[in-house]
Image (tube, rainbow, N blue to C red):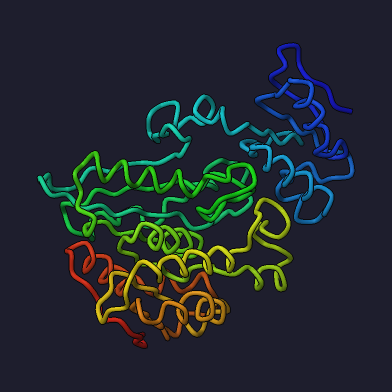
Length: 354
């Protein structure tokens, strides 16, 4: 049975109450900032609500409904999963409160790392996060994996590193629009543009990089903003995760109005209308035919962009699955990032590498 505290800021409920409880409060002009979700007795109290939702479709529906109202799990203890409303992230998330992370006017969370060498002509590397190694952690850090934490040591010394959190959905929005925030992608573009303007960075000195979910963001936003891109195994279709892993990433009929392949069809079509094919490019896709994602990457990204991109197909023997690609393709990834940061370009075409 649900109840709300005297201030109207904390809603106490259980999974059996359902997402319609939130609608009742919103329609009565009471919109809590926090939800304490006490797990029903039938659930394992050692598991947070995200983990439980993987085993119970009704709980998954509840969690998606709450995410679509901007509520994200931020803590779990003693059989209670706690959720915070997006507008309260700046007041709750300690790294934001203490200034370790920044939050812009649109609510986009990010970090900015100064270059190793100060210059009047800085470069910018934008890093998009992959899915957290503990995918269903109750911590808000599931939205902000610190991939390649030492990357600044291996790129042009005048490079500013911008890392952008992927807040939204249940484990992330893949840096795309979601039902709660249909302007999420525009907000991310706005943040990048504001950093470029603030530090007087030339457009050709901007490179977007990511692996897996981060590669989805890097490729999408690189096409939209016509920036340099190094995307390692972008997820551009979720069918494999539906069929094999029962919607591993919570993207099926949950927090998104459009499928990824639809998003990329649209953005690629717009890109091709603006940009003429050329024998040189500033977009690189690294993938592997040894990965189960290869069919989707080829169909939804490589083939429609064939005249515009450089493709590296890694045949490294250690690649057995999708997550193996990024860790085994570091040399070509860094080579491509630095090539683009130094305002150079790559040959359009494909190459098989180890």
